[in-house]
Image 1 (cartoon, rainbow, N blue to C red):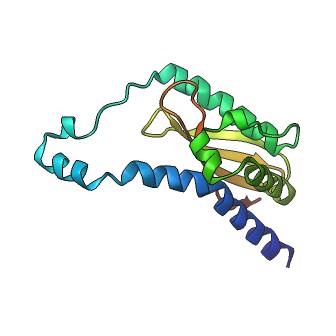
Image 2: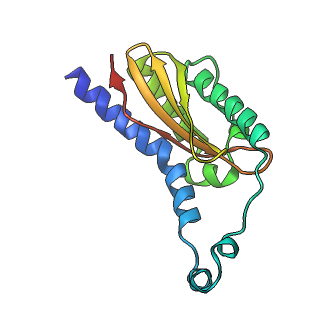
Length: 161
């Protein structure tokens, strides 16, 4: 019975926290119709403008934002709105994000980073959190330019120990 309540709470948490991630991802992958037609007629290099990303600065920013998330997950402090882009906060208010993090903490206990997986982009990270009662996969993406605030976050249901 407790397992069912906890898994439902974690699923709800993942949905709430990923709302910003999903809207950001959809906005980036759905080009406007004229741009899509132009992309079919133009070379692949000219279809999408390349964004120059300072990989070292983005990595440092990912580590900083991950630290802010894990500190908030441990309940040591509240997550600050300065960690998120305005676009993210429009679709996922800070109160909803904090409630989602609090729900995860109440379900699986305190969490520390177990490992970070390599991704194909320097502005996103997939992280496995080692929590008291289980493991929680976390994905988040940051802006490609300074100040590298979080544009999307997704907490997945826990794997129990």
